[in-house]
Length: 338
Image (cartoon, rainbow, N blue to C red):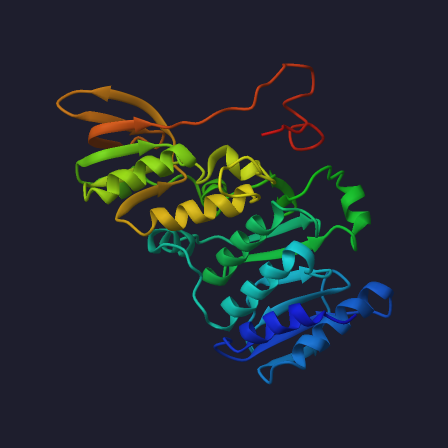
């Protein structure tokens, strides 16, 4: 298969950023799927002297891992990482070569502290908008911790596995052979499920906030930005940055913006928040709020944050109609319109 000119032009710029040599350790047969993967890898390897291909035997055919010479990264792709997963492939290539992932230091520390082997497998569709976030999050975890490995499995080339495991929606993540998560997940959510919640001790040194925003959707983001712009000490308690808008594919009713997509819009909001000195505490849920000398917000992990002012921007919930099977089949046939 041949990559189109636009993709190759984009790829050339990224390949110039490789920090070190990388190896595609490929398991390929003589079938059509293997031919497509072989042509894909060979075309990319021809574009950079830092990339080589090595034949290996592994669990799935066709598949390949991205490694440094003599060093396994734990990141593998079963099938073709095209469509929405092409970005996942590029980021994995850069990160394995030595470019650090763009996540905060506290999150990196928690990932590196995991001391047990974890093998993740994520089943995806190349047309799935939610899949890349999960794939990229688990790839980052594998890059940062040698005890963690992750394989992206493209459902079109591995339909028998999809059918055998009765996977009804993507992304679906398996951990050590058992179903682990389904649907869009942030790196904070995946880490909490795999390693447990953040310790309340990590919040012990937090100072008194002037404003503490509970919620990470558009309203919470706006509140934090406007507060921080005034130069006051601002914090955010965020379960999932972006909120319900992250589930919205097309947005066509925002004045001045003919069309955008929810994940793109909320990435821009998060980038805007990060322009200011806002203490964003992701993957956290508030369970209680009370007023003493100051306002206290207690998190589910037992930590207590103190603030002069609290803004509750907890967003919306899907409206359920309570029919049998509705909960069990959420994201597996039952869908919601934002």
